[in-house]
Image (cartoon, rainbow, N blue to C red):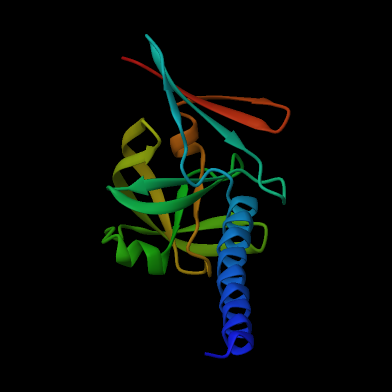
Length: 169
């Protein structure tokens, strides 16, 4: 047996395996930089549930959550009146398009459709019967978490952490 060929083969295999693990590692680093809140942890207290969020590298608060028990990614937007769902995602979530209306955005007036979310979840925070809008002009799959949801919980900003708090009934 040629030990030189075996050694070369082992070095090659080790390099391929090393590249594979580095790719996995840096892929997770990239995902954490985009959304450091991919798995939000809840702190359950006697009279409230808290979820602490970290800013992403662009300074935004993104968080994994669910609409009607289906996973989505929320972008917190205190400037949005409603929770705003892109039309393609709304179709996937089987949200009903209600009355047509218009909304003002940074890019001007757009057409939206009223809808309702039965349950919106972030960690252990659950909001029921949440008013929302379906926006056919939104190209992304991210959901804007507007004041129709945020107005029903407390939120406090300190440094680069935003704490969401839902008081127990």
